[in-house]
Length: 429
Image 1: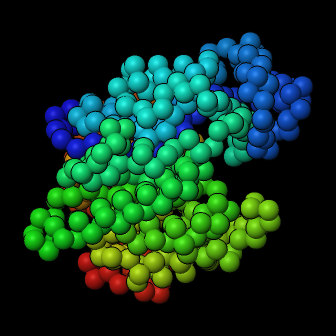
Image 2: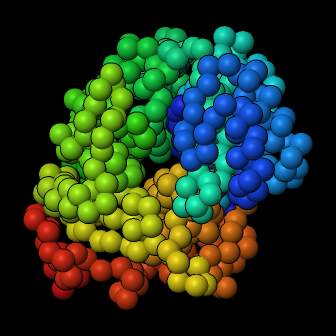
Image 3: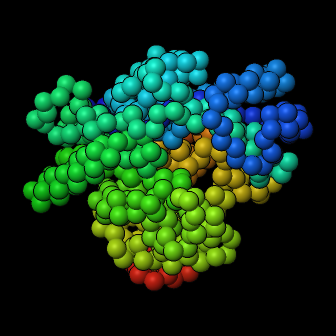
């Protein structure tokens, strides 16, 4: 896709995170965690960044190059992938920031120096850069995460939210036709109340202007809005009205199975002290998801695209009022695979195809490309089948080659196999 040209700006938001990823050495990691005071297979949050830095140094000494250090966080991952796919054919601006510390310097080197991302608050001395270390569990399906907290949650102000001209504040970015505004729910934690209110107002105006353009026959004009909600359902439910409004007006929604349930079926979660203490799992989750997908299809605008990632179950797509399911890929022994970072990768793929206006690519192609990327923050690929190319550029060629026709043996509408309420798909019958 190196020949893709666009004049738009991609606006992302959120706080970049230092990511340390380890894929093996469970026993070594378990011993280090015991000394650290954390338990294997448990997510631990630590206030003290220095303590996390010491843990990192201990891990470096024990595993060497098997600790992969990189820039992380949902939208930094998306920025990296899109820039690599489109060869910097679009300007990328990240509404967020990170600290002027050792970890922040590493993030800055990647995002700003190497990739050319325009960051709102780079190397801000008021912010402590957050670190997240992901380590293997005893069971291959489990993992242990140790992360640090930031000391300044509300650093995104109203003046940082892009808006349509005229705009008097030189710090405020201005929106124009061809831009894409990606709203990440996790950024809500870093916004002032005024900034969150301004963001919703701007998203509504984007929708209003695009609808007016469509009435005039200009479907490609305007600013597209992508919603990528929180990974913390408790916060989504706390701000439920806010996210329901965004769900109505977004052109594209990219979520996982618990995120969508937090919006469409919050009663399924039990919350205490703004934390989830019980959530649906297994068959209960699948039953609720089946019901909610059917209800969503009947409520969405016909031109909305919804992508729901669902772990080793693969992905669900709702497009033009039709529901499709794409199973997860398989490695050589037939084991389903949906590797770490695949959700971010799906997000990046969908946004990239919105930008280049080639969303008629097959669902299978998007899914396979996302899985090939694995944890895209690492800027590395894994082979999920013997035929998987080892370069992202090769995968874009595969995707383009399969772009015009869905694969009928892999992509089927649910109305053919398992009818659900509110779903009708004559195209697939």
